[in-house]
Length: 380
Image 1 (spheres, rainbow, N blue to C red):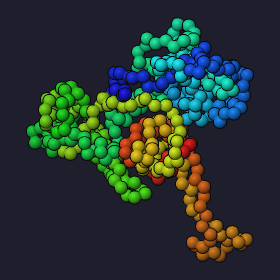
Image 2 (cartoon, one colour):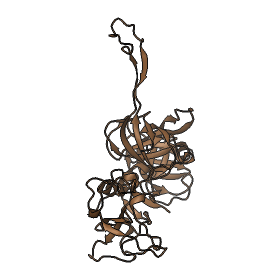
Image 3 (tube, rainbow, N blue to C red):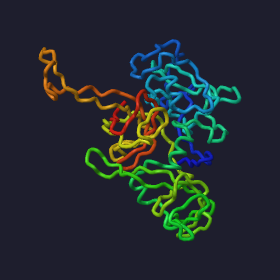
């Protein structure tokens, strides 16, 4: 089930978060859960639970427009990847529910465990004690990451999986015998298939190879955004007109649709198995700041999936200790001394949003230092 994202917004969104109202409902077994206010429990880790709540977790939170599931998780949890363990899903509820702006989330304790429920649906002020279908545009529902961030990256990809490059349409010629193309030029592309007139495509120039540092396997390529334009004549080759360029278009440049289907049916969660990955590419030379994209040398064949949270660590340097035997280190030759591996330093957290077979895209959710090519990615 997929979400169609375009540069101008969302054209359709499927229910992404399998969320159910718990308050007032009984379990499938017929037993009524023991529910109490969060004020009656501890504020850190509940008795018998390994769920680390935020020390400042409120009893209630009103969902705001622009919130993401990551934002909401951080309100209640010290580590947002525990979201699946804190959201209470009643087994009797058959219809999934989304979180919308205006909804009131309540932190309660059920049988001694901290749980989040929807205490009130936004808009009408009516408390819902039984599951009901909400009649709201699905595009207003809360998802794990912002729509526009994924849309801008997938519509103008600069990190490319090798299979993306292999299967993507390409420019075959420019009209009137031009060698390069610019704004206003008409160009011909092969491989577009049955794309209709006015369908818009981004043009990307394929640059450097991205290889797995573990075995030197080719995983993908870096790309440079060239420009974009609509299809004006259908067929193979199809004709497009360039309406926007940032550099010259060349024969062989690849085409990607500006409107891309992206699966957003995921929630933040930690991997079940051990992950040892490496950052193999970043959008720029270094990444510092939320919502930048990095590529990892692990994918679905290694157990990674959308929603997985990984910690990023800078590799510790190897230094020489000239003082290990009690000396002052003076008059020692260069390169002498015991080699010491300094510890790896955690510098950020990323969320996988697209997993290919052997490579993944991940969004930087938090960072304290630059995230660079060669940094380590592992379990949070």
